[in-house]
Structures are given as structure tokens and as C-alpha cells.
Amino acid sequence: MSAVKQILSFILHEEHFGLTISHIQEVLEYRRVTAVPRTPAFLLGVTNLRGQVVPVVDLRALFGLEQQPLTIDSCIIIVDIALGDEQVAVGLLADRVCEVMEIDEACLNKPPRLGNQINTDYIEAIARQEDDFIILLDLARVFSGDEISAVTQAVQLMGAGVDESSEVDS
Amino acid sequence: MEQMTANIGHSADNAKQTEQIARQTNLLALNAAIEAARAGEHGKGFTVVAAEVRKLAERSQVAAGEIVEESRNSLEVSERAGEMLTALVPNITKTSDLIQDISASALEQDKGASEINKALQQLDEVVQQSAAAAEELSAQAEQMNSAMEFFVVDEQARGQHAVAKKQPSASKKANSTGSKKSAAEPRAKQEPGFAIDLSDDTEFVRY
Image 1 (cartoon, each protein chain N blue to C red):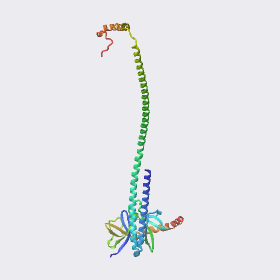
Image 2: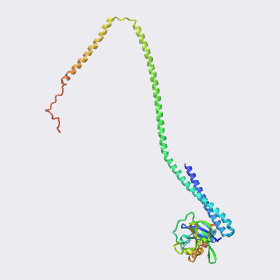
Image 3: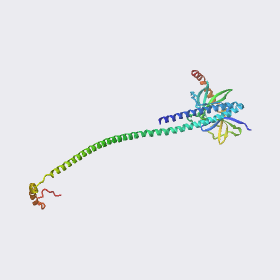
Image 4: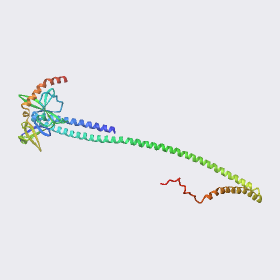
């Protein structure tokens, strides 16, 4: 029996994407995000997750996809990414979250080099699932270099402020 | 009708609420599945449960969505029916007015008919009275006739009396015809046509 990989599938721009389950903390309903000034466009802002400040990234903006209005199905997927030697929680805005599924490693293909809407650096693999493809994202590569520094900056910028406001709230 | 619309709206709200709950259950199940997957081998059984819960939530979400859609449709239909009924009201009022008019006219007709009835009864009374009077008269006349039988009138005297009675009327008649004739005579002379004098036609204008 070949190894299986557990992933969380979600939909973005009518395409199926997947994230390895071990990176995922939880899925939230879309909630108000506090915009942070002087941050890149892909950074929607920060949200308060049980007192923890979590930056929220708009995957559409990050991947250069057309912007769409939020729907009732819009979700924020909280993922853990490695930042140096510490783990940081980051929210990813997705159009819809589908399900937790198991994918046979045998169904995983290497990403093609060309002809994708997305820079293939982000893609860990492409999984065949019946007639559909699921694009598995490599979080470590999605948030690398400039992106991660922007995110961490935002966290540092807003950390104190949100903590204060959460105290005021409580 | 309004209550029905309100009820449908209410059940649509309920269905929306159910949809919302189903969505949240779905999300919860997803999170449970994520937790179970992170727990690795120990969470395997729970993954299956979570997946089942998620499927149920998805189904109830779909069902609630259908209910919302259907109640929206029936809301539309009942609103339309309400509009139609409201449109009917003026016509019904008009019909009611017309019926009231008819009723008033019928009442008046009834009054008229009873008056006619009364008048006819009066007429009947009068006729009967006059019939009675006539009968009485006839009885008296017969009585008189039988009383007159008692007298014997001389035939000659009777005839003279008749002539004397006739003459003045005859002369009167002759008188009246005579005067008529004298009046007719000058007219008879003029009668054969008009003598039209064409020489003097200054009165006419030629065109």
C-alpha cells in the first residue's frame, strides 16, 4: 500500500488548491480584517484569533488573480509557517474550503514548467483527483523572502496595537 | 393573505438560519477533521466521523438552500395573489354598489306595485258601488215602467205631439244648411283654377 497524503482542499478562482494538513491550524469563517497601512496589497490586514494577532493574506492578490467580492463561503485558513526557527500563524483568504481528503502519493505529479496562472515556484505538486486537478501549495515557498518579511513586519507593527484593543474589548 | 405572506417569510428566515447553522457545522466538522488528521494515527477513526458530520452538514445546507429558494418562490406567488385580490376589491365594491342600487329600485318597484294594487282595489270598490247603483237604478226603472203601464195614452194625441216636437228641429236644420250654402256659393264661382297674370312678373327674379 502506497503512502497517502492528507490535504485540505479549497477553491480559489474556481480552481482546486490543496494544503498539507500538517501545516493547517484551523479554518475560520470570514471575519472583519483590520487593514494595516503601508503593507503590500496582498496583505489584507490582521485579525484577532483568540487574542493572537494573525496577519491575513489575500491569495488572489498574492497570485495575481482577478479580485472578486467576498461571498458567504469565503473562509480564512489559518496555517503555520516557519519563520526562522519559530512558527507563525498566518491566515489565507480562500473562496471556499472543501474538505479534508487523502491523496495517494502516486497521484502526485510534478508541476509543469509553463502555462500556469501561477508562478510554479509556489506549487509543490499537482494531484489528479478524478477528472480534476488539485494544486498543492508549498507554503514554505509561497511565503519566502519578501512576502514573509512583509508579513512579519505587519505582525510587529500591529502586535502592540491589537493587543491593546483586545484588552479594551475585554 | 398577508398572514400567509408573513408566514412564508418567517419560514424562509428559519430556513436561512438552518442554512447558517449547517454552514457552521460544516466548518466545525472541517476543523475536527483537521485536528484528527494532525493527531495522526490516533485520530483516524475521528476523521471518518468528522467527514460524516461534514457530509450531513453539507446536505442540510443544500436542503435549507432549496427551502429558502422555494419559499422565495411561494412568497412571490402569494404576493402576486395578494395584488390580484387588491385589484379585485374595487370591482367587488362596484358590484356591491350596483346590487344596492338594484335593491333600492326593487323596493321602489314594490312600493309602486302596492300602490297600484291599492288603486285597483279602490277602483274595484267604485265599480262594485256603481254596479250596485246601476242595479238599483234598473230596479227603479222597472218599477217606474210597471207604474207607467197603469196609464193609457191616446194614440192620436201621441202622434200630434210627436209632429209638433219634430218641426222645430227640421226648420232648424234647414236654416243651418241654408247659411252654409250661401257661404259656399262665392267660393264655387272662383273655383275653376287660378287666373295667373304672367304679364306682371316683377315679383319674380330670373336666375
